Length: 178
Image (cartoon, rainbow, N blue to C red; front, side, top):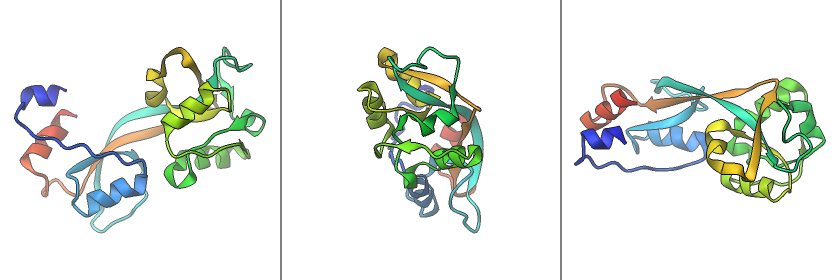
């Protein structure tokens, strides 16, 4: 918002894609000047894409408000083997695979979906539990409960670009404000 206040005549086009590799491909092909993405990158290019770390975003267990652990201090990763689990399709979310592999847990997968908003709706309806980034669930209101994971995990958010030299003046100003 502050960028548009400083540059009110600047034309910004936002593109939304849930696939990590699609966003990276758009950068590589020059379809976008810059992109918000999760680090580390999936695709390795020559020359490599330039990235800058922006923020660490904790991953949370997302539960129906009437779940037995809804008011606990945290949600144990091992519990995903017991509760019905609703993940984002694997090609879209490498974070969940990393969590379960590192904790040696096989989740009780009940449904698959393509986006976090559908997950939140299914959880709210009592159809299972999931894992979503805190930035995604903070705005969900009181319809679902979210808890820190035990052990804790997070994703690293960054901004990516092909190169500093290839940036348009507008993109350079935008990145300077991020």
